[in-house]
Image (tube, rainbow, N blue to C red):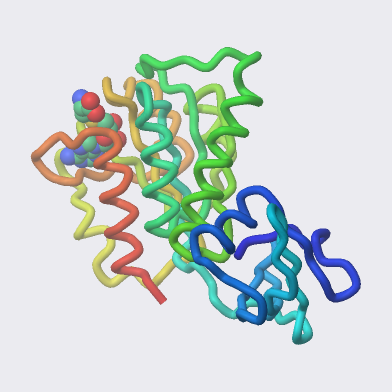
Amino acid sequence: FMIKSRSICNGFATFDGDLFNHMVRVLRLGHGDPLLLVDESGVEYEGVINQVARDWVVVKIMASPKISTITSAPRITICQALPKGEKTELILQKGTELGVHDFWLFGGCRSVARIREDQLTAKLERWKRVTAEAARQCGRRTIPDIKWFKSAKEAADLADHEVRLLLWEGERTNRLKQILTGHATPASTIVAIGPEGGFDPLEVAHFSSRLFQPVSLGERILRTETASLAITAILQYIWED
Ligand code: SAM
């Protein structure tokens, strides 16, 4: 279970809300059942359920904390232009399950959906709940971080990843297979994906100036959410631990 380190006090931790529900109602854990808690910096605590009340549960920490040895290599950042409607949440949920390290969402020139400044905090909170829930559901030990950028340029300027890919529907020469074949697992990878209307040439120029390599996923034009999830699955498969 993903927890906040501050929830542990004198060898005990009390949980209510979502964590209580997941432990007691969904997994039906009860007194004496063992469980593993992992905090935001990857420190693991072995515990057992010590007390179950109507809407909270107490866990007793049994062993000294350890740094988790499970990494989520390869570290993939999905740099996704804001898509329409519920697609953002779909990408966040499924991408978290597939192992995305973090998400950079940006307002693409051709994004139909827009986020006003005054909506941003609420949106980010909602998106973070989606990734937290997906991480908990699939047993991941870290929750992917989510950043918002107003434009492709803002995001491109900040990218310093070892491998930078631009999934571009207009690319005719560079195929993913050629780029990845024989490439050792990089320390970090970022992949930019356009919105429903694709990338504007100016955005392609920004990403290219920041050494993003334009790459084609083949002849078929995939929906933005398909492209996002397909590239994650491919990179995880090729560069998994
Ligand atoms: N109109 C469809 C939709 O509603 O989602 C397709 C949109 S496609 C233009 C969206 C993005 O997916 C592109 O900007 C690109 O990043 C990626 N993409 C889709 N198919 C691709 C391909 N064959 N090669 C590279 N990137 C692709």
